[in-house]
Each structure stands twice: as structure tokens, then as C-alpha cells.
Amino acid sequence: MRYICRLLLTMLLGMSGAQAQGELEIIIDTGVENALPIAVIPFGWNGIPGEQPIDLHVTIANDLERSGRFVTMNESDMPQHPEEFGHVNFSDWQLLRMENIVIGNLKQTQAGDFEIEFRLLDAYKEAQLTGFRIKAGRTQLRRTAHRISDLIFEKLTGVRGAFDTRIAYVTVKQDAAGEERHSLQIADADGFNPQVLLESDQSLMSPAWSPDGESLAYVSFEGNNSSVFVQNIRTGERNEVASHNGINSAPAFSPDGGRLALTLSKEGDPEIFVLHLSTNSLQRITHNRAIDTEPNWSPDGNRLIFTSDRGGTPQIYEVDLQGGAPRRLTFEGAYFARPRYSPDGTGVTMVHGNNGFYRIGYLDLDSGYLSILTKNRLDESPSFSPNGSMIIYATNGRRGSELAAVSADGRVHQRLALQDGEVREPAWGPFPPD
Amino acid sequence: MTKRIMLLLVLGIFITACETTPEQDTGPEVVDKSDSAEMTDDGAAGADAGSEAQAFGAEGDQASALQQLDNPDSLLSVRIIYFEYDSSTVLAQFEEVIQAHAAFLQASPGVVATLEGHADERGSREYNLALGERRAQAVKKQLVVLGASPEQVRTVSYGEERPADPGHDEQAWSQNRRVEFVY
Image 1 (cartoon, one colour):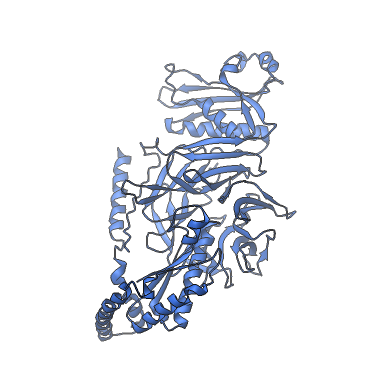
Image 2 (cartoon, chains in turn purple, yellow):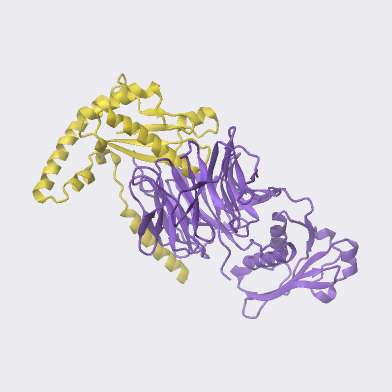
């Protein structure tokens, strides 16, 4: 058998002209019952009519709608399209029982940059809840819209928004010759701006973000065995950090970014190690002849959760990095795997297998209560949004693996469909730096 | 413009790097030179030459051995062992096949077999990668007990990444929970 390394590294951050293809389409299946009504009114534009570079209100409304927590008003139902605070007829909006309205302006400056102004208004109190004015280049306009969505979300729900974040995932397509092409990609959290970081004719697995959002760790089979790489997203520079005999897999960055937990079987069976990235030294964490894999760090960096079948079936265990015996966390079922702490560390999401169904579960660590969040047959790879409100995961759809998301309380369901090919192993990135 | 030049430059660097990646056929690699190099760690040049001569002998050995492997009536033509769900227990029905491969390896000391472990798609990918390895190691353990030398048997796991059957039902899954002998 012969596998040729045909990797093409394309670092197209901000350089790509071919972004149109492969975008994710987001479909909302179910939202919450008492979703907040909000009117995002078309923003004013000082340039040539119809030639504004972005419909900010559309991006903002889509973000809010996608969260499942808001119902946005149709443009045609709006009584007026005010752009300034002074032009808002609050009584009209009160009559329509529309409490929250968003207005704004997009202006092109003489230098060719843009200035965006937005206000979130309480129509009942006839007052501004929040707002800002900001300058942005043409390529930053979508991001600015997501930041506006984040502010609105936080103001009205009390939870920090995660619209201005990115997701990483693996796609698999067949090329013209029928060969599988695997690619590691990142995109905005709404599926826009997909960018290919790596292409390979061999499998790519387990993308994991560094806490600063600058790098991804992942598993590649390009050397005909699993090995772990860390790749800088901006420069494309990548390093092979683990390529021992046996399995090299399941990388997870520590919260401080200086260490990588991973699974190595170089000593005979899969064990969890911590790789200190600055010194390249390895610290062995587990000592058990069973399978130990899929480590994930507690937000405080003091503990790891992982999958182990030391009790006969795969279950979730937690271990202190300082040492001590691992504690078993899951009991109600024959199959628990791939745990991920919630961002506040109070819960764990994982794959739960029962009676041939593999679904996304959530375990509350305080009460020990397990809830099953999804209803499909083959769900895997759950990953929390950095604000903890959503969990993105992979499910088996009509075209093979597709992405879906569910709110942490199980009430909001979304599907994210790529135009063609399979999408696997979503990993939700961190908040952008302030 | 600068960006485009940077991109070309970086792509150039990458393609160069890619060319240096080994593109060896795994066929000849069956003669394990890295192992013999390890064994002659303290070795002088003479020892190296010796191991090379040995390698040529092994290749000859391999040629005749491969003829046996080609015989469709031999149990050696069975190269896939199947497993039950989430299990790495070698089923009794495959014992004869493993015995045949063990006897063959014992009689052909220059031949190296790679055992590729695989899993079906259910559950998590990383757990399945570990499961594939454990299946390959279970077969290796039996081969060694039955007379093959540990150096003759390599294991690698592909987890659920290389399904033999791309379907999503028990029929497909039963074909994908497997260990393949690759000579």
C-alpha cells in the first residue's frame, strides 16, 4: 500500500478570494418558547443606495435568531425605518408590543474606511440600553456586526454573546478521481468565511484550539500513523509535537496554553500524558492497562477528565494533575466518551451510548444529574461555545456527517449544513482577545 | 500584492517540505532497517555492513515467502479478522487463521507483518482509535505466543478513519471492526 503525502497548506486568512464555496447554512429546528421579540431595523447608509458593502441588520438579526432566544421582526412588518434616536416613534412600537429595537448607521469615511453606529433601545422606557460608534475596515464589517450581536445578547440575556467567535472542523470530500480529500477548516461561528488550513489525502482528526485562538492542535495520518501537530492559524507554520510508536492523538491545550494533554500508546497501551510545550518534556498522568484517552482540562487547569474503559465499558473519569486516583463520574449507561467541561467547570458534555443510540449528554457535576440533549442515532464530538450556552456536535445526516448545535439546556436545536461533502469534529474556538 | 507574494513564498516552502516527506512504498519497508540500525547502536561500520548483507538475505526469503501468501488455498490468504462490538477478544473462528500466520512468520524470519486495527463508526473517534490499536495488539499477542517474533509484527491503528464499508448499519459495522494483515 502506498500513501503519498499530498498536503497543500493554504493559509488564506484574509487573503482568500475563494470563500464563496463550502459555506455552512444554518437551519433552526427549535427555539425557546418565550423567545424575546426584537426588531433589527435596516441601518442607514450614506453612500450610493444599494451599494452598501454589508447589510448589517441582516447579519445581526440572523445571529440573534440563530441563538434561539430571540424572534426577529420581519422588515415588512416594521412601522418605520428610523436611523436616529430622535426619529423613533416609540408609541408605534409600543402599540406593536415591540420592546427591543435596534437602529444604526453605516457611513463610508473619506479615507475609504467605515464608521458604524448602533443603538439598542427599550421602546417602553423610550431609552437607550446600549450603543457604540466604531471605525472598521471593509473586511472587518461582518465581525463588527457579530460584536453588535454580542452586546445585544449580553444586555438582554445577561450572558456574554459568542457570535464573534470561530469554529474549526474537518471536512471530507471525494475529488474527481474518487479519492477522499480531508481538510481542516475554520469559519466564523455563523459558518461564513470558511478557510482551509490544511488539506490531506489522509485522515485529519481532533482539532483543538489554543486558548488564545492563535493555534490549532490536531491529529494527522499523513505519516501512515497518527501524529499530533500544532499549527499557527495566521502563518500556517506547523510543528509535529508527537510521533511516537503507537497512537499519538487526542490533543487538548491547557487553559494557560503552555501544555498539551494528549494520548500516547508508546509504552504499550493508550495513556494520558501532558506535554510541556516549552521544554518538550512529557509527564505521564494515567497508569492503567485499559484504554485511557480523550483528555480535557478543567477551566482552572487543575484537573483532567478523560475516557477510560478500566471498569469494563467506556466511562468518564476525573483526575487531579497533582496526583491521586482517578474518580469515576458516569454510571448510568454502557457507553460514555469524549468528555468536555463546560466553560464554568460545573458540568461535562460527552457522547452517551445506550441501546444503539449515541447522543450528546450533559452531566451536572454538582447534582450528578445526567440529561440527554439530542435525539439522533449517531451523534459525536460535542464542543461548548465559550459562553457555555450552546454545544456544537457532529451528527449523521443525509450526506454523512453534518454539524448541529443544541443549547446547553437542550431546548434550542440547529443544523449547520455544508453545501457538499461531510463535516466532522467541530471545535468551538475561544472568545476573541479584548 | 505583498500578501500574494507572501502566500507564494509560504506555499513554496511548504511544497518543498512536502517533497521531503517519505514517499516510500511500504513493500520494501517490510525489511525493517530501523530495527537493525537500533540493534547496532554501538556498532562499527563492519556491523552495519553485516546487517545489510542480512537484509539482502531477508529479501530473498521474502520473495519465496510471498509466493506462499499468494496461494488462495492457504489460510494465509485470509488476511482480515473481525471483532464484536467494543471488543478486542479474538473470536475462536479466527484461531486457525492466526495459527497459520504465526507458523508462516516463524518460518520466514525476514518477513514483517503490519496489523492494521480498525473500529466501526459508533461512539467517539478517539476511543475508536484506541480500540483499533487494542484489536491489533490482541492479534499480535496471539501471533507471538504461537511463535512469531515480536519484531516481525507491527501494529497501527486507524480507528474508524478507514472503513471497509462506508454504510451506517450493522452489516457495514461488522465489516469495519477488523484487523488486517498487511505483508
